[in-house]
Image (tube, rainbow, N blue to C red):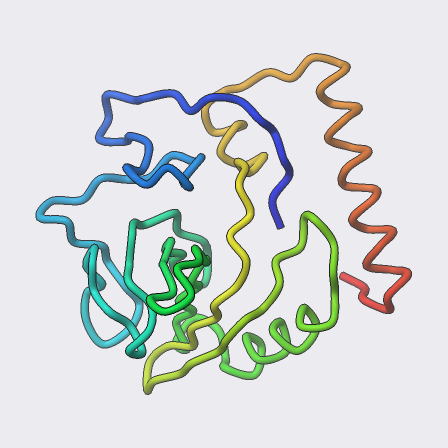
Length: 171
């Protein structure tokens, strides 16, 4: 999940910049030739059409288990996040379990699951794109928080955890 920390992105000189899409509010890594590394059977490129219905807009980030891309649903003209989870790093059952848990939850900081696809090497989860930046990205920029900001973030986290516990989800 993402916390809504509404600050403008900083343009870095070390090959990082904000995404060209107006929906993007986070920093992405610019890769040569518009190519993004993917965990699956090849590379994912900007403007690629995935599963016949999603156009890749940009690379959003990378986590321990895979990558996340901003995509547009071609018919609905809606923007979504597409998680590409590498089966070699995470068993497919875990990705399926994540989707199964999230499908019934409705909270502003928890993405709604819209679709799930799979190939031999990856599981792809299409979910809500929640604008904001992660605490991890702010900390990696050596961002220091004021007491007021810290209290606001901790209260958001407590609200999310309370919602999850109220709905039988324990982490």
